[in-house]
Image (tube, rainbow, N blue to C red):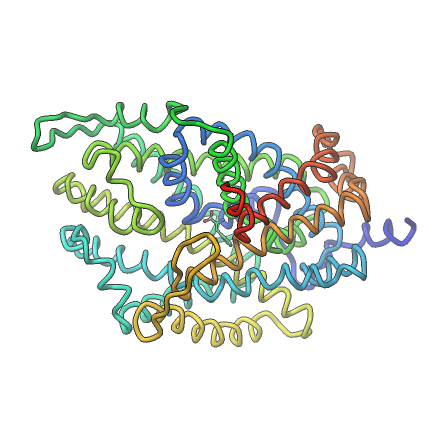
Length: 478
Ligand code: PHE
């Protein structure tokens, strides 16, 4: 205990400063959380999983699971002042392996995130050039990603922009850019969402659909054909979306937590980050579902990346001239969202490496930039020169990018949360986290809920999620 309280009073541990205060931290953490997951994954899941029913389940889970996992990561980061590998080692030396597994998640994600960023970059360029009608052609996306030179080039450019932000450090890089980009992103998404509610279109068969009807499709809970198995599936979809969306269980929030000062209120920061993240997800749905509904009917909703890169460009095209502007705004906003997320992934790797190898930020960033530029090109070529088809346990066929995504998000993250909740809930005890949140007399209103969640509910749910992503639940028809 003595030992602990000494450590708790040392400064926030970092050699080279951290966030300037709570706002800077919340913007950077929200920057990490708000990403392509909010823009394409959330709306698509909502459309597929019963509209308002999914939204309701998602919000309840965000306030319970999301809150628990986010609080844990941030408090672990601030209390230890370290990055995942050493933070876990400090919590309990025997559990260092879990810190290493956690570190591997960003290591994997970084191989492909810049590739997705590059896709967005390509669309920004298309709309800047006023060529929205090209982008609306069905084959546009495919011919771009299967073009080895173009797809690698855009990935590399995105990689360099990310590296530039990280190179400049926590306060002068990450915080500075997040403080500008996040409020702009919010304004843009509100504007497009409101605009999409005003849409109206009569299709060739004479049916007129409006944005407000689309809003109804999005928000009204759909209980048709709901069975226990189906409800379970929706619950698991919402659960895995929360992980991905809040950037938890991958060491990112531990690293960002290690950069905050002792006077920052962790509890209110968690609420603000969640509010931002869920708010953007809800707005993304409000923008995408009504506009697709108006122009294409609800059958027009593509799954996964095709929603953003194939369905939406068609919608922008149907809007006529203004579609070029809305398309540009949309992809710029998506670019900001992806950039601040990608920055958080690279930062986490850089910070862990600096700690392990005792190297300086600039040099570490440069070396990792070289490594990940090569990795990004390999992944980008996974749709052309290195094309493969790998069957996944969930029944889909993966290219290299999907495989990396599956291993890191569907497989490793529930596993890490399962073991972390056992470590915190049962080995070191929830009080270790509660003390950190309450440090300096701060309030932690939901600490009872936190303790119950981390000890009982999180481990059970994570176990189920893990079984599902390993394909084991499929054996029982779930
Ligand atoms: N949270 C981001 C999103 O919602 C995704 C992400 C995952 C960001 C991993 C960083 C790291 O899109």
